[in-house]
Figure 1: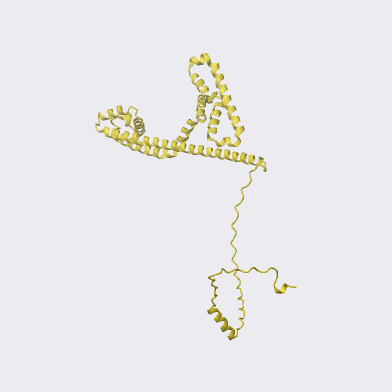
Figure 2: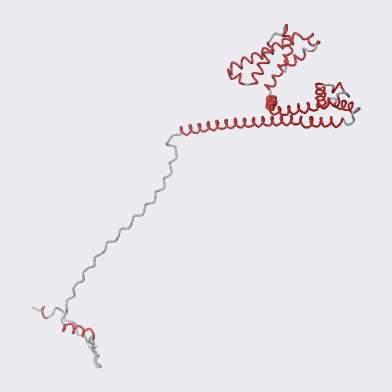
Length: 317
């Protein structure tokens, strides 16, 4: 920006007369700085330097400034102002706009062809209709093309229309229709294409920024995992909490063994009883004998004899 200001001051005779030496020194210093910057970029990037279009743009501007401005090349001295265009490669917003314009060039090709076709048809019609009335504007085809291009930009179109309408009152329909088609249709198509290209450029930058952010987040996450793994390895195994006991697997039920059959004990033989003895036994069991109790006497009470001491008769000597 300082170099652009000094180049602008060199156009003033008063500034050159008083500060010509300073302006020349600043111009040389800026040129040397630009050359050193390019040399540093070539050394740092190597062959990749020439893959960037903006680096090629800066190289072309500095090369033009380094050419001698004497003799037949004195016209190149005026091209030093091109150094101010290096701001485009430095300021990101300017780079975005220029990139969008360059991206929109393929889309604008069809619009340029359409506009050229409309101008050619209108110029032929204007030359045929109004060449005799206004020869300075529609005398020949190149003159009619320039006049219609001037009217398309809005410069003096009303004056030209009124001059032709003085001889041809219905000429307003031709000029108004031309203005509507060229100005409000074709030029708006240019604007639409440029805006669309800028939106695409902005979307690409957003996607690129998102990808860079995702890469940075993944790198940070990988670093955090490595730190956690390192801290886990430093902790001794003794301080590690005991592992929880594993649950015992349920025992499978054993199949019941079949019960062995118990052999039946043989019945003991019952001895046969003789018939007389059996009859006696059955009779005794049917009618038991009644026991008679003695009746007490009415007069004297019965005395019970005391038992003899000693043994029985068999025990005497």
